[in-house]
Image (cartoon, rainbow, N blue to C red):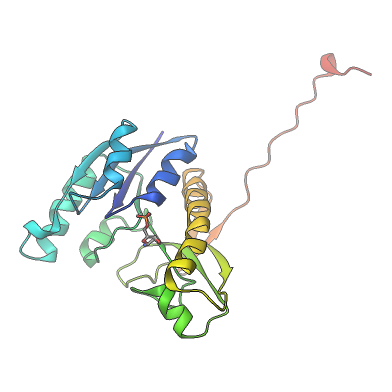
Length: 213
Ligand code: GRF
């Protein structure tokens, strides 16, 4: 059974989608937030998942916050750490600790629009398509190997909220999908690029005793 730790900062709808997916061979061991008021903590607790808060406002600098965050994460010995709307930039040290086993969802078609306000920036740029990306986390913000993307049209009357809502539907679809692929050990990273291997073929068992003409 693979252990997953999910980090959130707010609503937690992506975390919820992953929990609801009930991925075989995996269990969400804990949901950790940097904000005590994160709405998603309630859903996790109601579903019997351990929760923890490492409040970034209580730390003097990024390094001491990350040290405490790392300690909390490691309590659950995760095989996979999932950043699901976790709004803190992590230090290179912490990222290195989970290299190849930490993923993030970003609401744009990376490498376009790294950072914040992605939907408004896509609209302002006159982009015809927008979307979302699940990727491995590396020290450079929103730049790690891409696992899966989904795209949606940008419509002429869109504002950032309308576009975000259209994209979010797909986040809830591809994020659990990416977690499932990793749990099934189907994702490889080579030369900075991630590839997803085909599912192992299921053998067809023919039992003559059950053959009915
Ligand atoms: C999502 O749009 C995610 O892509 C971005 O922040 C939002 C978090 O939403 N990083 P939620 O907390 O999962 O509902």
